Amino acid sequence: MTDDSSRRAQSLKHIFSLVAVIGAAISILGALLDFIPGTSPGLSLPQLMMILGGAVLALVAYVLRGQRKRHLAVSALKNHLLACAAIIVATLFVLEIVLLFGGLPTYFPQDIPEKFLDPVPWWTCDASGCHYVYEEMVAACERGDLADFRCIVNKQGFHDTQDFVVGADFAERTRILSLGDSFAFGGSADVGKSYVETIERRLPDAVVWNTAIPGAGTNQALMSFEVYAPLLQPQVTILGFYMNDFDDNMMPVDSYFMGVDAVNFPLSIRQYQIDLRGNLVKLDRQSDLYYRYHRVDPPANELHRLLGSTRLGSIAIRVSDAVQQLISKAEGTRLRRRVEVTREYLIDLRDAATAQETQLLVLLIPRREDISAPGPLYENALRLVEEIGIAYLDPIDVLDGELDYAPPPDVHWSNAGHAKIGAILLGCLESFQATQDISQCRG
Image 1 (cartoon, rainbow, N blue to C red):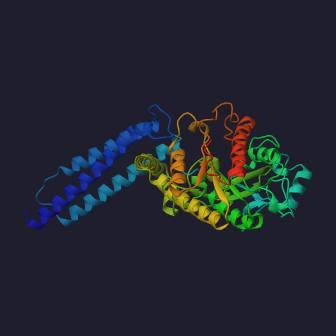
Image 2: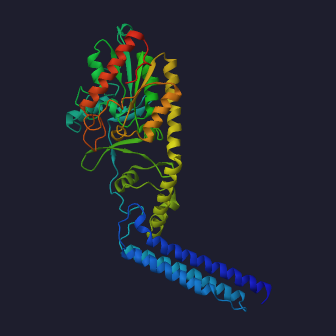
């Protein structure tokens, strides 16, 4: 056998070895389907066909690999290459058909919503962040489209009983600016029972402006502060920091789309999502509803979408997701990124507060599950405020995970929780009035 023939034979042997490995991988993947998140346990027909199909592919390739005829020519090599390609394509095609009739869903489902969501007129975003539109909210509440505490809104579009207008006596009064999300907004509390309203009621001589908006992060809090702090000139600024602020800070301030569905029911949905790799993905409203409905991350690119539209490709993506989640948990990549982004916003807010000569207090808001065992987000939030040098209130030791929170799936404080936090903050503010120092507030 010539050197060229020997090299061709060796190349052919490597090719068939690779095909055998691919077949074995398909077979093993079929056997491991039960361990992929989202799949049902038990050996199903699609799994069995994957195991058998992969085994047949591996066996045929192994047999062809064993040919050791010394007179192989270039034409024979080409024929074998075409045979291998045909076997692989036919096997993949048969497996795709089997998985289709076996009912295995694709990673990206095919039923696209028929109707785009219509935007509501009572939501807007500007230099002060996102907020409600006063005239449109009043009209919607009068029509009965909205009938909850959102109907209590001032002319600036925030949940406050007073407009953000400076009074003649403000110089003699304690001025407090509240920043935050749905907790500071008053989520799940009865009207007048939120912790901000508790402070306002118990300190009648103080001026309290509440710029909190549901779904807001530290990025929006910074924008609201830069607009209203120069106007109010608060002595104390209180930022309610909930643990989902780490995620909110990864997205633009105007990430929420406010719309109504086919029966005119108001919906609040993200216009962005963060995929498993930490990439920010912008979605149109139809796709946003589509991915939210199916509880799946959006495709990172067109190739990802096309691959996720096939059954075999969907299995590969699910395996990749499972591996990615394990890596993410092991390395904490996404957590570190969220922490660093939030760190920058907190530093900017701290510096802006210093420039406005207001004392900044961060109210850490633990999740229900943090009460019994503080999670990594809460631990990172605590570490951040300590490292940055911001005064903070840590109420985790005084809150009850059952009594002070609304029934699941609601994540907010109940009236009892709001009252407890309001009382603690009231003590902090009374101490501030006596000492002009909010840094002693610890809970």
